[in-house]
Amino acid sequence: MIPVASRLWTPAERLPLDRVHPAARLGGGVLAVATSLLAPPLALMPLAALVAWFLLRAGLRAGGLLRWLRPWWPVAMLVLVIHTLTTTDAAPLFHPSAVGLLRGLLALARLALMLGAMALITRVLPLPDLVAALGWWLRPLRCFGADTRHLGLTLAVALGTAPRAQAEARRILACVRLRRGDGRRRRGLQLRQRLQVIPPLMEGIIRQGESLPLAVAGRLPAQPERPARLPWPQGVVLVAWAALLVVGA
Image 1 (cartoon, one colour):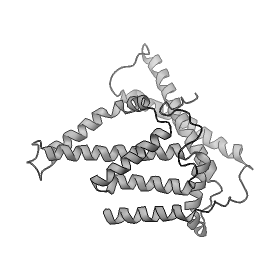
Image 2 (cartoon, helix red, strand yellow):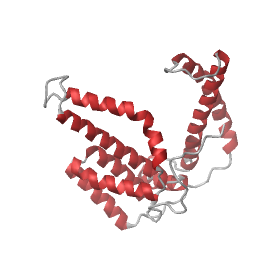
Image 3 (cartoon, helix red, strand yellow):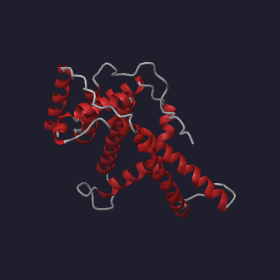
Image 4 (tube, one colour):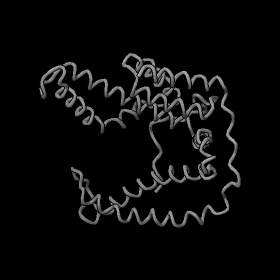
């Protein structure tokens, strides 16, 4: 089965940050995730505005985002309830408090900002740029025997296998439902049916893994490509950002 294309993004001729070095894009994304988790609350506001602006420029669809977030609303409500009832420095245990509610909202805001930064990384780093970025950051490990020749192939196989495996699991689960009943979805986890999907799914993945070395034999580059040099202004920005994060945290 061919995985369905994501409905979160609209096609864009030019992505934001396309003139920035891939390594700087990846490093900035990692720093954005770390900032969303460690920075003080006031520092989250400019970062959230910047991430939202880049997401809109990258073609994020608001309707698709709301549909994607809909299954997570019960989890968000559970986080709020737990923080509201278990903040013991503002009220006794299991007594609701406004401080606990605010802390729950802050935790959800940090999580949303972290997910937005990760989504932006995946959007502005296509596979060739991601390979170049990881190759640049893994340069110090070459003296320890790290081989980056297979990096692009490994990422291509990993990123291609996950959605295919998910689509195949849905197909097998639908076949199990058709054989066990009328094919209609029933409420609940249906754990037994989901466990029955694992053996045939793993068998298919193992067969694909056995045939993969023959398919890629002789197609690997003899020498890894040299990554492009990182412009020094972009390196200065990353170093300054990391230093501010360490000082602020």
